[in-house]
Every structure is written in structure tokens, then in C-alpha cells.
Image (cartoon, rainbow, N blue to C red; front, side, top):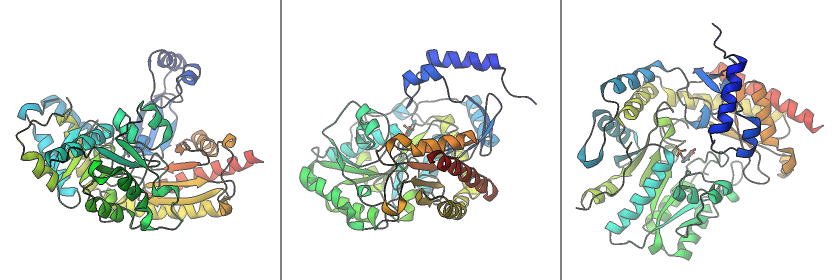
Length: 459
Ligand code: PLP
């Protein structure tokens, strides 16, 4: 069957796109000249097709979210059934619905430690925004309403609202938030000095300690961290780091928020990223993988202590979204988790990590610019450096990561460049958790060819 669209239809869509659709994280001026890079139309397994009918491997699960891959009919059926029965109901004013109730129970049963309740959102930014508000609210209920500051670290990504954008450490996003918010403070972050392969010194929590001391613990509400940073360049917390931050938080009456929007629900080869270090956060924020991108859903998972405090006040919880506890999104979430468990996808991610690491060793041996390869489950990446032995970056003008990602794209593999920072050229690899050995080897093969072509271009 020829599913591809005619040239005239592609042309038409492209013109309409340029005219009417303002795209996120895209240069508008370039976009209205060049038009869309690709218009997706369908997908199956780890592959997506565009409207021309060309098939691509989705090597980053789109935005690290399509963890079950495409064409999962059971998810479509779950959505269809719920849409037909009760598409939407509010969860304000004590109203409720079965999928939201059952999913909350399920999430709590999976979450680490003493997690005990869930607040629903429509995505990651809303989850982190909610976490900030609930953290401050919690302290005000405890009679410590001065505790308002949220500490975040360098290269973090926490979302696109004013608060979460301010907490975000990636400069471009941080600046675009429009607020330098004096109650959002950046610690320098261990990752300035410590990356995978470097020393893994748990004392790097020291820079957060410095901020707490400088600002005063009585003013700090929470620390937010991604256990493994995604957009900032796939930086893995060194062993001991999260435990040290958690201890620091406890000593100073500061809440520890784990942003597991990417790392939650199996992406890292364990159900949650913090499970790798056996740390129990006070708040865990999730989204993305909770529905595998098939529906818009996020959740904020609260510890028992937070829940107990929140449920003991007579005050109204003055926070919520129209789509908090959306029955269709929750039905898709329930089915997503059922598939993750039934098909052992967390285990598969852990097994595929080994294959990916073997592939990275091969790439590193063959290609002199590949450096600092890392993979935790299927959250992976590598640096490109001019001289990896001496830690020398490529010149900015070479746009190393972008070029390699572009070469992969030409070969029908979608990856993502993290090159927000001058001197950093990182390529992120995060395929759907359903990927198998053969498919992963195909991914490595394409990266291999792309790197060869990149090296030729360097002359
Ligand atoms: N937190 C992390 C770690 C993320 O990667 C993202 C999105 O990429 C977000 C928060 C924001 O999520 P959303 O785009 O769903 O608002």
C-alpha cells in the first residue's frame, strides 16, 4: 500500500505550517523560510514514517517519552474505551473517576520508599510547578512560611513555565523564562566538575551546601534534581551524590524533589532513576513515560510525611488543573504500566544497556572523537571532542553534535544533540524500551557510518 502523500499535499501542509504554527524550541525566522524538517504520519515499533513514506528509527523516543514505541494497539483501545464511556470528568470539588483512583494506587505501589499519594497534572512542567508549590505550602503549614527558595543545579531541565524555566539550568531556557526569580537559586552543581569517567566524589554536594549556608536554611524549601539529567546532556549522578544531597536536605529541613520526568517508569533499567541509588525523595515528579506519550499526563508523588501534613489542614488545596486526573489519560497510564510489567520492559532496558555499552566501546575504539560514553538502561549518550585524551572541545563553528545527528538523520535515524553549552557536543541516545538487540545494533551501525562521514568532513 502506498501511504505516502502527494507532493502537492506535502507542499500545502508545509506552507500552512509555516504560516500558522509557531513551533517550540525552533528558530521562527528560520522555520518560516525552511518549513518543517519532517511531518510525521504513522509509526510501528521503534520506527516512525513521515508523510513521504520514509521510515526512520526513533532513537530518542521522540522527546524521551514514547517508551513503548509506536502502534501499541492496546493503548489505543484503552483510550478508545475510556473516551467512549467517560472521556472526561473533573477531579475538583471531590469529584473522582475510576481510572484516576486505580492509577494513583498503582503509582504509589511502584514508587520508592514511603510514597503515599499522587497529585495529577498534564505533563512534566506542571508536575514540577506543582512540586514547588506543594513544597512551599508544606512549609507554611509547618509554620515555616519563609522557606520558599528552590535550589536547582547546572544543566538541569525542569520545564517551560516561568517557575520551572527559572529552575532550569540550561541557559537558553532559563533566560527565556523571563524571570531571574530571586527565590530560584542555582547551585554550581557537581556536574561542572564531575562527569562520568571523572572522579565520583560524593562531596560534590558541597556546592548545594554552600548555597544553603549562604541563603540560610530557614529560607530554602527544596532542592530539585534529575537523578540522571536528560536535555542538559545525559549526565549521570555520581555514586553517593544523591545520598549526600538527601542527607544534606534532612539536616537542613529541605525537601528533596526528584525530577523523574524522563527517568521514571523504566527508562533507566529500574522503575525509577533513584532506585539505582536507593534514595527516597520527598517528592517525585513524573510525566512522559507514564503514558508512553500516548496521552498527556503527569503526576507528583508525595511522601507519607507530606501527605499527612496536607490532609490535616482545614484549608482548601488551592491548586489544580482542568485535566488533573483526566480519566482517559489515566486509563492510558494504567495500560502503559500493565504493558511495562507484563512485557518485562524495565528488565529489557537493563539488558539493552549492555548491548548499547558494547556498541559504544566499538564506536569509541573506531572513532577518535567519541568520548565519555554513558548508558543507564536506555538513557544514554556520548560526547564528541576534538582531542578526547586532553579533554579539548571542538570549535563551536564545527557544530560537531549537530553534524553527527544530521548525518544520522540522513541515514534515517533520529537522535538528539545536546549542545546548549559552549564547548559541549553531546549526542543523546534513548530509543523506546521495546527495542531488541538486532535493532540496537542497527542503531549503532548507523551512528558508526555517520561518524565516519563526520570525520571525513573534518578533512
Ligand atoms: N523535567 C524533565 C527532566 C524533562 O525532561 C522535561 C521535558 O523534557 C520536563 C521536566 C518538562 O516536561 P513537559 O515538557 O512535559 O512539560
